[in-house]
Amino acid sequence: MLKGIFYACAILLILTSGCGGKPEDRTGNQQKKTIDSNEATKVAEVTDNVSNIKKEVLSYIEVKTWIDDFRNFRMAIYNNDVPKLETYFDFPFDDKGNSILGLCSISDNDWAARNKQFNNPDLFYKADLAKYYKNIFDKNFTALLLKVKSDQLFSKQHLQTKIIKDNDGAYQLFVDYSEVENTLTLNFAISNNFKDENGEYVSEGEHNIIYHFKIINDKKLILVRVDMAG
Image (cartoon, rainbow, N blue to C red; front, top):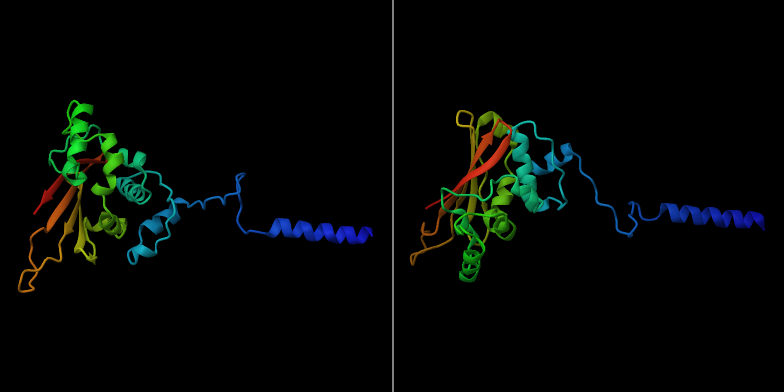
C-alpha cells in the first residue's frame, strides 16, 4: 500500500514539474523571452526577409558611440517605443524643414484643437509624436531601416538599401554619415505605380523624405530637421 502511494506521488511530481516547457509568472502568463544585447543587434541587422522577423520586444544596448544609438533608434521604432523615441528629439521640436507636421496628416479638427492647446501650434510636441509617430516613420521606412548594416555604415559612410515594393509603389533608403559635419542623414525615396494613358510610368507623386540627425559628442543622435523633396 505504501509503495503504491509512493509511486503515485512520484508520477504526480513528474507531471506537475514537466508540463509546459516555459516558466510562467504568478498570473499564469508565459514569461517573455529576454533578448540580450548581442541577440537584439543580430535581429536588428536582418537584411533579407523582414516579414520573417519574429515580433518580440528587443533590448537596447549600452551607448558608447553614435552607432550604438543608431541601433537603439531602430529598435525603438521596431518596438513602437514612444518614450524611447522621445530621446531623439528636443521638444518642442522646431523643424526648419517645415515637413514633420505635414507627415502627420493632421485633420482640420485636430488643427483647431492644437491651436487652442499650444501657444505655438507650428512646433512639434511630445503629444504629436505619441499620436503620429507611425506616420513619421511608416512601415516601409521601418522595413528599410532594419536592412541597414550599421557596421558597414560606419566604415563606408554611405549605404543604400535594395528596393522594396508593394501595391502602391517602390521604396529605397539612402544613409549618409559625415564625420566632418557630425551628421547622419536618412533619405527615404518613394516612387509610385502611376501610369499615363499609354501605360508609361509617370513621376507624379514621387518624393523623398529626408531625416537629418546631429551627432552630439560622437555618441547621441538628435533629429534636427525633416525635409520633403519632389
